[in-house]
Length: 530
Image (cartoon, rainbow, N blue to C red):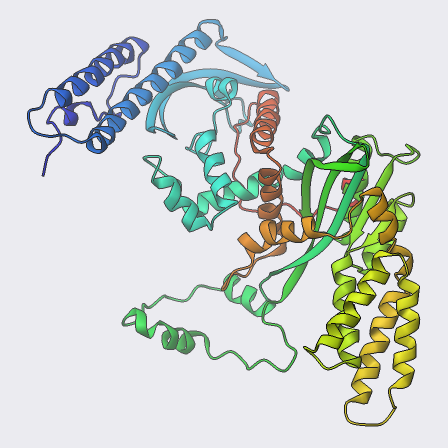
């Protein structure tokens, strides 16, 4: 098996504690490293034995990463020299005086590995001195968490798609030093504290159509029970490992005891429901409405009313405000709460119930009148669907009332059939005005809520609803909102927004950027959203 050239050991450079960090020394090191890249390529190309591109690609990657680390250190050294030429020896901010102290070396983990740089420290003087600041860190927006901004945000982006452990393992395949799962989780929580401000201040997309479609749906995610939270937050017991992986189940039961058997109807998920919003526009082209255009997602575990307040705000941004005279279509699954909030926030909108939910009710009603799986049942449902698409939902209700009266009060199974039919009749009667499917077909509007159904599966189910997961609402809120930003294609804009916001604050008070947070933000409230 072929071995790599010995020269490689001379160019896989990492900074040492005693490495000179002056711009002159780093410039010389950079030139040496550049020559090493060329030499390495020539050595591999001139070898007599067979070589593979795979092995050379691995070898050159190490050398190029070392070159990039030196270039980063040189950049930091040059910026420090330029800044200190004009920076005063003493400064005053908000009545506090700071005096220049000697430069202190620091290690920073970047996309290319660990780099070291020296930066001057401005120490507060006086009887009530608290803390100082580093002018270079403030000027460049360097993170105070020993990881560069790009490493942290890349890890957080992966965590929106994978578990924290999988995100770390995936990132470690591409960068030399990946952050721990705890750092990744804290970064997600830190970025999650800015999502509400992002959704509020993000500009409306350009090039919208003439019709705005807004769909609402809910999805539950497993959350921790009080007993699970008390076990997490209590005093940690000394952990004893099981004899082998085969014995971990019985070891866990001895440690925590058996779980009580669930009663009939009890749910193990302890789900908390998030409200999902999908918004897009349609553009008229003859008799057709083309789209979707500028599709955006939003989800939150806050009360349902909050989602409607956000949707109202975003609709106004797009030019579909109250009194604009433009067509807005609301599509829901028939939830009465959603209907109430739709009438409150979008009184001018056309509210449509997802036709697939109505058809499911028709199958339920048909099975009360015909034997399940038979051809007469299928034919009856098809006939009711024709009525539905023709705008004759009231005729369906009338027929179901007649069929219910025709079922005897007594008899095997009759009570259940009558109750199920009564439930379907009540569902349809209260929503007949939300079933203008004939008008929707004529105007080429939406009949179903497939877009939001797919969104809840992708945003919430795919990442947050797996076996063994038990979330806290405020923590899962950060994941869900960041997933929406990623799905909207706004991740880079969001990260730039947070960085500029934090850097402006750091420049005002001399603090350092700290995107990590151990505490999640509170669930958004209606007043903040409106």
